[in-house]
Image (cartoon, rainbow, N blue to C red; front, top):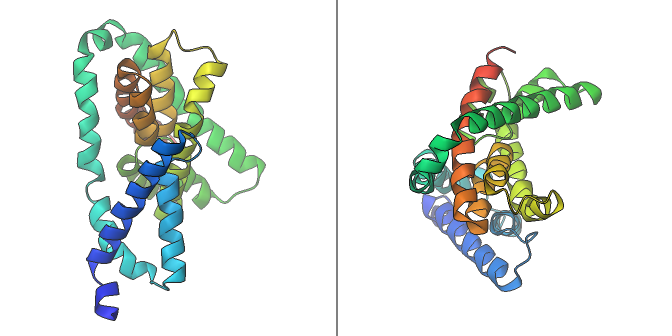
Length: 226
């Protein structure tokens, strides 16, 4: 039994099954708060606790899935390519919006960390919270942050973005401005938010995908000045 628990198979199967359950629950309920990833995280935590499975054993398979995060992000280039003409026509607004989004995220983290008296290590860990995980991990590492905290912050930020994006679009009346809506989602909640943006609309998904890359680049550049 211990050999099975300590094999990468357990982590991989647990992640895949948990996410599939999350997808089915989300599709049946149509409740944004019941995000598939959020449900999957809950299921994994419960199984690890109840089954007394060591995190190190689970992470043997989890690390293999994590390895594909970078390549999978490239898939987001497909909707961007399909909206290439729109991207070209709006290149300047896209640059400005993603640049402002990146610096706003960084400044807000620094400001809140100062207000609550958090250590510089935690601040460095939280600065790249709004960019995709591979970029966030590298930025945090260079700044002396804690990678585990960074990953947790990125996940929470992405889930919140995916959950509240539809409501925020309605609240700010951005239904008629898909470019602005997509850029806002991608700049604030990276790939997880983009998965929701794609469901909202093709143009929103393309713009959100573009925002991921541009916000990531700006975050790296701005972090070098800290």
